Image (cartoon, rainbow over all chains, first blue to last red; front, side):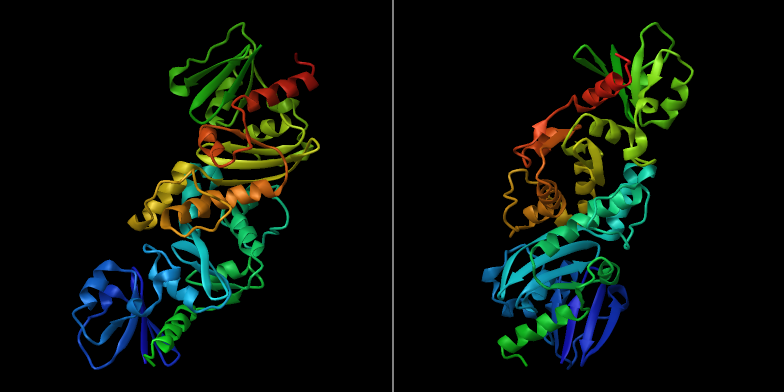
Length: 205
Length: 205
């Protein structure tokens, strides 16, 4: 069984527990005998994949009644992986989704680490600080570097833990955020777990 | 008595309750008989003002032991205006400072409204939404536009009200934020009030 999570820049394949990341520009799409179950947030790639019968879009197998129409398919599939928890997917944006008793309770979107640090720098050179992942988020800061970390990541942390649910971290910056969310589960296979659950429900595997 | 709050782009004068804003490039600095008590975050202007004996920097009259060395003088003067409260100064950055029983308890810095919306847009055209100031922040969002508003402004709101203190809004975007912080005091003279308090303590008026 081959799974593929297609983002804006890469194909992320998953075959029997082995992951492979290939940049979209480096991958030649063609018809083959290998059935590939995929999710895709990239509209251009989505359009091209319709030509190939061995690429099967999992979107149509999801019960969408709990979600909203413009919600990213990656967020939806993350939610499908869990019974209860808060999922933080930290990439160019940081998406946060809350699932309670198997039902999506809502979610929100923050700026990613790179983008928000760049935005601070653009306001003023005096705000050119790297985030401090050793910060004590139980105290309101009394220094400039921590004031930025708290203003962007501290507020996120405090909201996430206020839900009192297990926290799951995935995405490219998950390892960095794990330093703040010390009790979170780091899971870089969360989306593939969600995809497998959807397939089981739909009797595709 | 003339007060002046000097920012990165303007001189904000205050004379007997009347405010006047003049762009730095449009204002000719010169020696005069008018004593002007000022605070200044603009390093270039600060250096030039030392030439003029009628311009009096209030920084040296503040008891700095409660603050930290790199804290902006505008934030410090805002804190000096209050006995207890959370001060939100919403400009190109949004600074948040907590004062309890006359003592600075800490603070943090978020991205300003304009800068953070621009940063979302730069991540993806799918994140090109204007903030929704009518959002219900007691619910986790279930639509894309509100997901951004909540991710940036909702987290700020939830943290600020968690302190259980009166909230004071100042700065260029204070009126917009007032729609979210319905119980906050909108006060565009907060810094001048802080300056007057410092002057009284120092017997300058």
